[in-house]
Amino acid sequence: MPGEGRADATVVIVGEAPGDKEDRTGRPFQGDAGSNLNGLLERAAINREEAFVTNVVKCRPVDNNRNRKPTSEEINACLPYIKRQLQLIKPNIVVLLGASALNAFFPDKKIREAHGKVLALEGQQFFITYHPAAKIYDKALGPIMDTDFDALGKRYTV
Ligand code: URA
Image 1 (cartoon, rainbow, N blue to C red):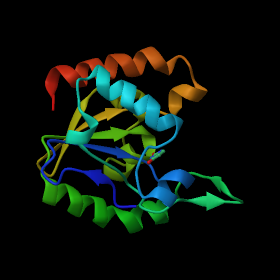
Image 2: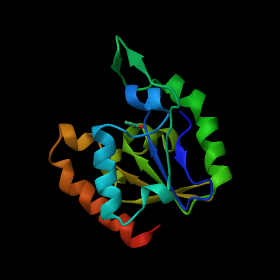
Image 3: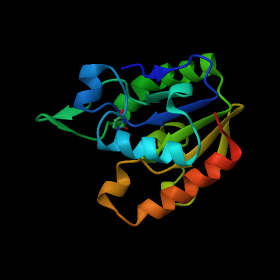
Image 4: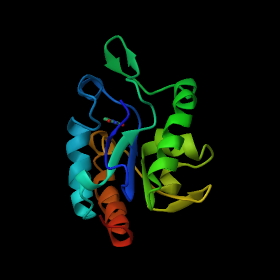
């Protein structure tokens, strides 16, 4: 699943990997994590249709019919693909959602310390925040993510 959106997007949103529905439809963030993401983007006044939305890992990592975290081997296999996507799109900001996306680009950073911040790598700026599914499991992350997306919205709008 390569992702969807504008080839000239100024904002690129990067999740972990497609789930079942995303894999079947070829469209990222369709389920509950997707509705959470839509709400957060709205908060930041980022129009999802104007952005490019994708994942680090391009195929669904599956175990006994259930989603699982991608392995570092799978992440490294897909890394050249997302890096090339970013070279072609050249966005102003890449939003990394969650630890898998963060650590694909910044292996030594911790999500708890890096969230809400902008990091730079090879001339590209990255905004770090939690994965939109995280607040389903940890309610305390809801207001923290709201604050992150408020900060994002102040810096970049589409
Ligand atoms: N979670 C992700 O990280 N990406 C999707 O596309 C859907 C759920």
